[in-house]
Image 1: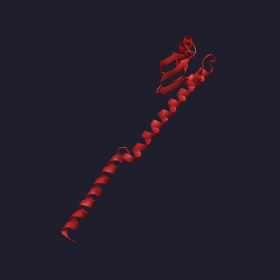
Image 2: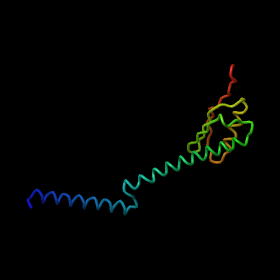
Image 3: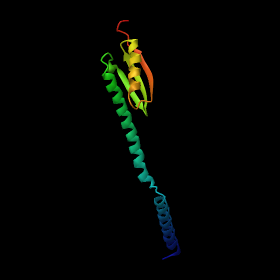
Image 4: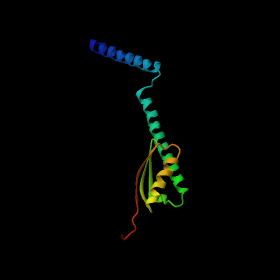
Amino acid sequence: MNKKGFLHICLAASIVALLGSVYADVRAQGGETAGASAAPAASTAREVRKANRALSRKVYAALAKHKEIDAGSISVVARDGAVTLNGTVAEAAQIDTVVAVAKTVPGVKSVSNKLSVQRPIGE
């Protein structure tokens, strides 16, 4: 074996030993490798989206109990307990009712009201 080949083998062995040492240190500290830690972050984001959708459904369900409100023309967007209401209602008094109902849903921390009164066609 020539000198150049011997140096390549020594360099490769040094890199393998260094990577093994770093991996052992990370595992000993309770951490994971970069590839393994990416999966829990994705599931956490998935869980947040799932919780947001569940909260939106709870607000829709609460609105459906009030027959005087047409919840079909209202969109509910939830993000970490903050609920945004968009859309239209038939009468101005219903805006306050929709906001009040949304605030009573467990998990709702705040309500942003972007509702408006629907104008009849031709006016």
